[in-house]
Each structure stands twice: as C-alpha cells, then as structure tokens.
Image (cartoon, rainbow, N blue to C red):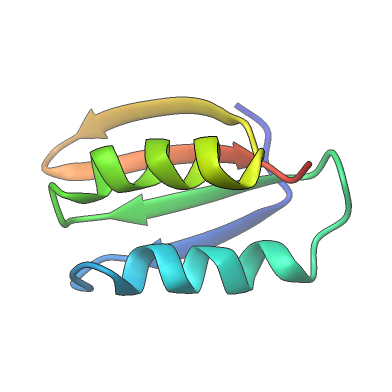
Length: 75
C-alpha cells in the first residue's frame, strides 16, 4: 500500500504508540496515509479504537514477523 509518512513505534508500549501516532498525523494533510509499525500486541485494539474515536480511517492492519503494521488515513 502506498503511504506518505512512516512512524516506527517498535519497542514502545501503551499508550505511547497511540500518542505518537496522533502527533505524526497532526502535520499531515487530509487524505494522506501514515504507516505505523508497532511491536506492542495491545496496539491492535488501540489503533482500531483510535481510528474509531478520531474518524481517521484504519485502512489496513496486519502482522509481519512479530511486528504490527497499520495504515491510517488522515481525515
């Protein structure tokens, strides 16, 4: 999937991946896509909840080699 910016939250535990994802989205334009990489298994539920609460669509969520990959579109 194409993305405009990447944020690597590997090694960070809740709530830091969400806090820093929010900051990463702040300077992006509407429609742009942020790729987030996390290692905290709690990020799976947290990213979906974050997307639901903020209205920024979670386009994709997957796991690859112990890392969780998310694509979030800025609303």
